[in-house]
Length: 283
Image (cartoon, rainbow, N blue to C red; front, side, top):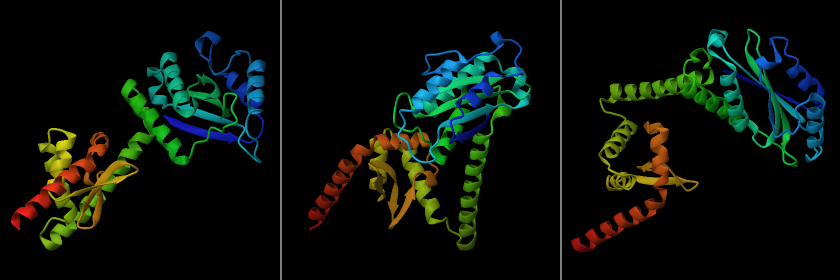
């Protein structure tokens, strides 16, 4: 699906809500749905008043955002596969990810170009706090929404946009890295250092029976684990850092590694004591 966002810095509650409600593409009022998220009212004038009253709670700054207009649209090729239940479920998921604490009025426009309109308040319900999203956060919401769509409604394959693009970019990055490593191997006749580390890490992982066992095997092989913000993030080898992501460790594997972060220091200490003991015996 394509997700567009428009922020407004003027009090256009009436204009936007009136526009969303006036869908000339729908046939009957009972052939659509409306979502009144954190709203007590269901008629237009009362909804407009609620948005306006809620904005009064917001901490005022010059030229600040008043409301947000978001649009979810689907491919015309999937038009026959989409019903109101699917649209409403996707709409509620989007509200949950985009602004669960905000006021939101939503309704689909059931024309040939099937899409859903959302009017979000710029601050939380009766809150002075703004509901702001960075570009990276909004990008992640797009990916999460398409992942949800792909899992729940795989038949809507023509409406996948961001996920396919993101996966293609990841694949291209891997191709670039692989090409560099191939050239090193071709030039020197040896695998690159990174390729050797990657093979060693994956060998340790496949032989491990648990997260702790995996950490222990890495440390035994002379690899040092490093943490970032109290999470295991990668490896240190010959003064170079390798992120797990660059070693083709999947996100699921990385999460498993992060859960074992608390044991890392203990395991490192155990190995250090063993090394010290070995040195003492040699003396």
